[in-house]
Figure 1 (cartoon, one colour):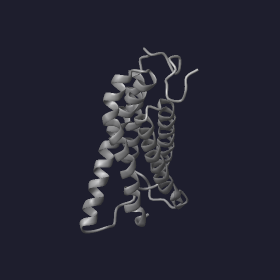
Figure 2: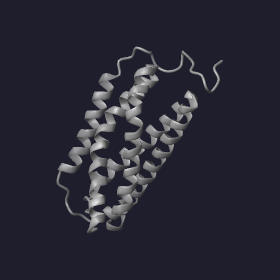
Figure 3: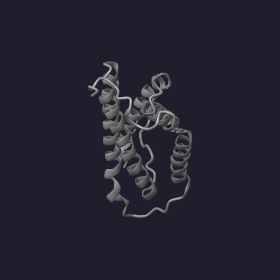
Figure 4: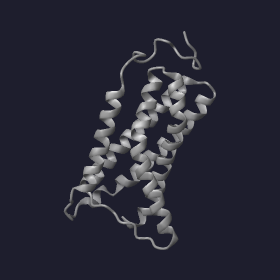
Length: 186
């Protein structure tokens, strides 16, 4: 029986599974839905006030994603693959919950404009723009990294994870910062 630090050769899906259609399909679907939600006009209606808890919930999900990613990085550096894997699953879980909550909120509530001025507005828009661009990039990167990991393509996984981990951390941290900076204007 394998201990916590070793990888069982029979654990996970088939090593030669073709995950490319999943990566491409999920990436296109997620990016298309998010884009459509921003493009479609929304009526100014009342009643969306009951949804104002969702941006805070999204920030909480992003915070947990950050913590799970940092812990996953800690454990993989100590060669504890099983804990790393569990924490990556947890990070995907909180990211999925974030995405569902985010999509629901933006499908039902009007966009909130940033109301700050001066240098803080420049900081906010820099963080927001880099967050949005890298969030779009991280979707396929995280999926490719994930599938390479669960298919035990270790060298390929490591190569891309060196890019995916810091970018995913940046996206999750800046998601919280965007919420903190815009929260007074909800």
